[in-house]
Image: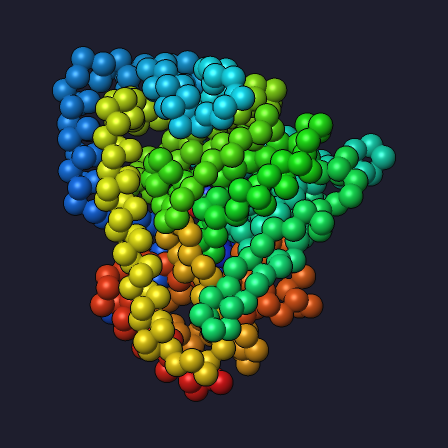
Length: 423
Ligand SMILES: Cc1ncc(COP(=O)(O)O)c(C=O)c1O
């Protein structure tokens, strides 16, 4: 059967997709006897479980239930949810010199992938004179899925990361340097950044964000701030977190890490001129996000309970997990191995760099897999970076902390065994 060129591009099983397939196969073979630190599913926390059960129950018994699930609605959103989100946005994403957000500044979409797919392909393209309008990912490594949603060739600027090592503490962190950005801003259409970051747990500083805003000043380049882990929901930031806004900012919000990963609601907040083209794409292809979950979320947000749980339960839980990971890494992985853990300021992953690693990250993944521990090799997070010539991209691993304390301990011991043999 002959299929389209677009299919050819989008169906490639490369990068993280290849590894995810391998992980699924390994999990099925292992039949439970494995430590899976590759996952990005949120942990099942009893407080959240009770909360969502109760919210769902109340909605099932409410008068609006049949109206919500038994009718096609507006192609844009469910009105009470939108009203709740306008209030929420004006409470949390407000700067001193900022106008108030209105319904026109909000878009409810089906999920992050569809939104990024539409945003990237609506705006990044080749002009008639072959000048490209490209996507700039200032932070590298970055959320790998941004990199596989292009219909036009060659529309990402690969950015090699800059990083600072602290040999004493065995920590390091990636920095954003706008000096590496393209001089000709006409070539840049879109900037995307996850803050807090998946995979590194980095939260780019207010100064770094300010520098990005200075770069886009006077242009129409939107800056998408992927806030899937940011406060106030799910509140996976472990230091003081400041949300800095600019007229070009588009804030993207998700409830996936507040325990609804499969109930697809993705909210986008920004200037109308940026949202309108994406809304057209979204309603033509997806019609709208589930009204069932928009209805439940309206009351969850209005009551402030979800915010409260994010702060008092989700944040506290993952912060503790990081402390455990750090403690056991330093206890079990000896100092003469040149490993560095990225300074974690948010999200739910640890990211490690192994200096002068004698094998590639994928080979390291295979060695750990043989001992029934799964991490994700780091290379697919270095989006469009030439990995053959840039070694660092093949010397990292992402570690999910969504496992038990005991599993973190065992995984650290296994990591040490493998590294000790290698170095
Ligand atoms: C940075 C980032 N953005 C977006 C998402 C996905 O969000 P959603 O489940 O709402 O599509 C994730 C999930 O892992 C993520 O890490």
